[in-house]
Image (cartoon, rainbow over all chains, first blue to last red; front, side, top):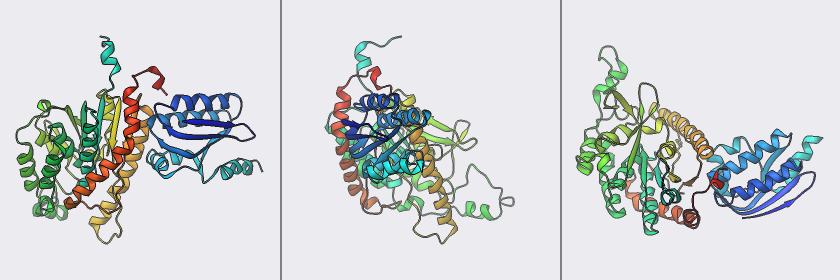
Length: 114
Length: 295
C-alpha cells in the first residue's frame, strides 16, 4: 500500500493497494498524524484502492472518529466497486460521506463553509 | 495457562458459511481453493443452508462428493408436499389447536429423510474438522450454537425456515432457522478463537414482483435478514482482533432457491472469489500473530 498525503485546507491522502491487516497500521499512523497536525478536514482518494478487509474498516473508523472528534471530517473519493461492496455490507456507507472523485469531496467541505 | 510460542504463532482459520440456499454451494469452491493452497481449516461454522455445506465439509468430503451430496439433498421435492394441517391452522388456530412446535406449511419428512441418508448417525463432536452450527431459539430469538450432538438434528434445526418448515426441538429448546439471529455467524468463529475468518455470505434476493401474501412475506424476510446481515457484519468487523475476509461471490445469473442444476456454476463463482483473496491470505498467514493487528 502507498500513501501520499497532500496537506491543505482540505488534506488529501492518495492511497493505493490494499487496506487490510498488513497495511492498516501504516494507514492509521499516517492519517492519525495528519489529524494530530490539525489537518482534520481529510479526503482519502480511494480510486487506486483495490481491497479492504475488517482491519481496513477499523482503520477507517478510527480516522473518522478522530477527525470528527476534532471538528473535522474524513471523506472518501473514487471508491471502486469491490471496496464499495464491503463498505455497503458493513454499513459504512451510512456513516461515511462518499464522493465520485477527489474534486467533489474537497468541494463538499468548501460548500459547507459558505 | 499460556500457550507455547508455536501455538501462538499459528493463526487459526475458520470458514463461515452464511444463509443463502443453493448459493451456499459457493463454499465448496472456496474450500477446494483453500485446500489446494494448503490452508487447513480449524473449524467450519454454518447456518441455514450454509449448515448443510458446513457439515458436509466438516465430515471431510472432497469438493466433488460434497457437490454431489448437496445436489441430491436439496431439490424441489423437499418442499413439494404441503402440510395441510398447518395450512388450516393458520385459518382456524383455536379450533385446530395451533401448535408452534409443529407449525410449518411444508411437510418436512423428505428433507429429514435426505439429511439422514447423507449424515446418518454422525455426531458433530466426532467429525474430523470442528463444526459449529448456528440456529435460533424460538422463545427469545437468541442464537444457539450446536457444537455437539447428532448432525441431522443440528442441520434440521438450522434450516427451519419460518413458515416453511416447523421448528426443531433439541433439549428444552425449540429451534428455528439460524439466519434469524445472524445470517452470517462470524461471531461464533470469533468466540471459538479463530484468527483469520473466511466468511462466505449472501444477501437474500428481493422479489421482482409481489403479487401474493407469500411473496410479500419473503420480501419482508429479505429486508430484515439483509439489514441484520449488514449490522452484524459491521459489528464483527470492528470487534474482531484479527482479520475477517469476506468472500461474496458474484452471480451474473439469477440463482433461485432450488436451482441445484446451477451448483457447478455456483462452485466456480466461489472458486473465483476465493482465488481473488489468495495473495492476501498467503501474506496474512505468513505473518505471525502480533499485537500490531490491534487496530
